[in-house]
Length: 395
Image (cartoon, rainbow, N blue to C red; front, side, top):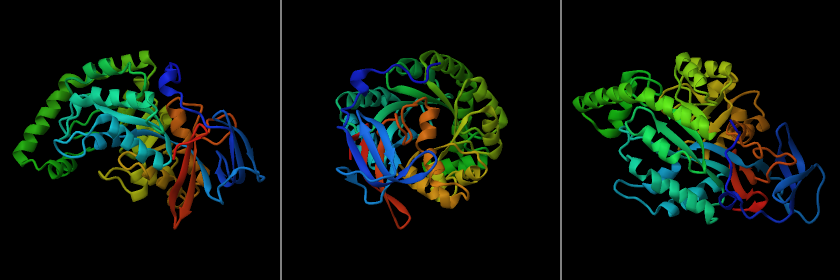
């Protein structure tokens, strides 16, 4: 399988910035934080030096952080469907989402688009998949976005139309990642029915009787559709060179299944046992940045900090709060003893880039893309001052 799928030049080649240099910056490299200068030519990093440079942009001692790489954010759907019965202009939604992403220091983003009807969601965006996919494509082609946008297909396996949707949309050029999800009650994210009922009844207001009918229907859907959807989607993804991720693995058996499916990323394992099995299987372990910032999971599962302390965290995702990615990178050295800032920043830049097969970005190194941001640290909280993508200032 190729690292990345063939690109369309018209859709992916931005206007690269002029040759440039910055100086007086605290540059976060893969191994160290050095005070010095950075040179960019033709969109790539050509020099890193510990001396000052004249005629360069003065960072005044602020951090120079590699462009962040976001693999799983549902935030686009929130912009497109901000209120019940309200659907915003889709291209404008992509632009609004992009503005927030870029202002958070993210220069490469995989926009998560759900396929397969999701009975858990009151939004039910299934019919709007093509609208969102086309909007992302239009925004890319017309140079409307500042970050580079790819598409992450979130495949709800226990649904009647997941296979149909994947077959229709997986050949879209920006699609580079797909996750295999199963939100059937009583497993994975919510391993006990008590947790599941408490969360979803509180969110949806269903009565006990309505909840029982809903649970029975979801279990029937899984029995009918999940396995066939999984095998077909896995086969099509490998044929198309799409990176696969598992989702909410809770048991060693879940991880074994993921390994057999050729999965490369374990998204949000919910237990230590699953995370340890993912490490043994050689999967990149992805956890939520909000989990680390808050110190706990919103659904009562294992904390990202606990896994990081035991060497079981490779990648962080902003998930539902875009700025949490930058915030978590600067918070991790305090939250996880023995973790330096370069190692923490790697979980939001180099590691996700490698996990997705994007080896041209994700770190400050000669020959890599000139994707970076200027970040001040005020009162322990990072502030993104400016952002560059391939040497072109985009914010």
